[in-house]
Length: 84
Image 1 (cartoon, rainbow, N blue to C red):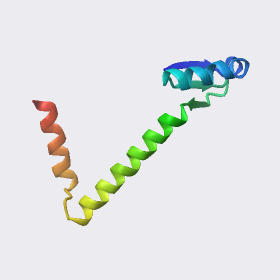
Image 2 (cartoon, rainbow, N blue to C red):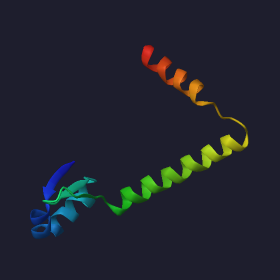
Image 3 (cartoon, rainbow, N blue to C red):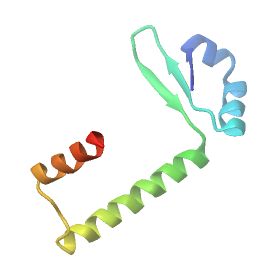
Image 4 (cartoon, rainbow, N blue to C red):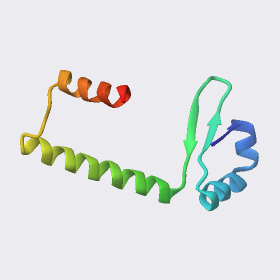
């Protein structure tokens, strides 16, 4: 992932868009006021958005089936992964 300032992005917008789309490369654009945005391809956005929707649907189904754990159980499960 590369980062460019606003002036560079403004002067090279087409090249940046082409790079993002052709190489599936995300680009951070920054301003002097410490504000930033990320440009990503529509394909990547759609893939990410679709995955989030699938993850939410799976989680809701698990909740409806009662397949949930309390925070302490979840914490212990995560700790166990890092202790191995």
